[in-house]
Image 1 (cartoon, rainbow, N blue to C red):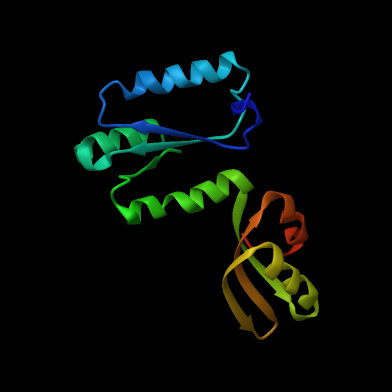
Image 2: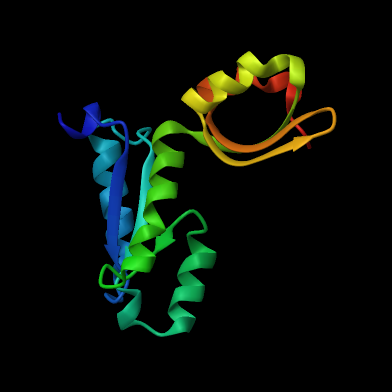
Length: 145
């Protein structure tokens, strides 16, 4: 019951175990059998410190959405946070150009988005930001490609 109420499942896999592919299939089979197959899932491939780089390359190609880490390496664990936020909040990275007369929108963006870069230019404000899919409509008219 707890699994079906989850917003996000963290599926941690030991890639040093040669049967990791089988275990992934088994977990997904159980999730399907309890009606939880549609819950967003982040596949975390752990113990990269115990396998050859060739195995990591194979895993990354077979599971491109997976995050490869060694829980013993804090820098690799830090890679998880952006992926978690992206999956959980369905955040999107955007480049936006706001005319100066849209200052109130800029204020709103500072409350609802993560501003990563801000540049004041002659005719407006250039922003690089991470924003939820639910809030994307606020900047839809100002997105840069």
